[in-house]
Length: 79
Image (cartoon, rainbow, N blue to C red; front, side, top):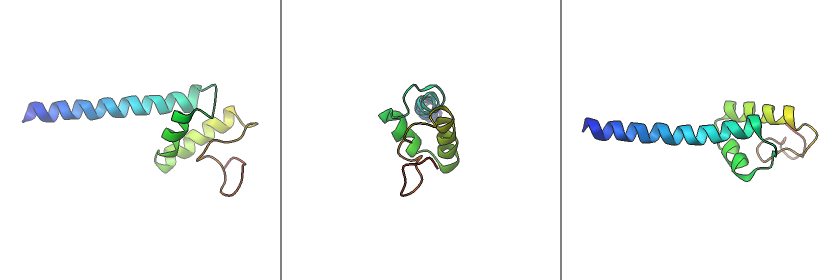
């Protein structure tokens, strides 16, 4: 039983690490703010992480249209 729990814990940590790492790469080192996978990950992050991600994207791409989840409601401007 302990071994099964350990394997499940390692699997969950690995999945969170891969998804979190992909999101981190998108918001900090992207060359394109309209990367589909990055937009989807960022839009599904918890509110504080999503807002931080949008702020990082805005700092790098302030002169471009914001990706889904980073636009002000009813507008094409950044939040």
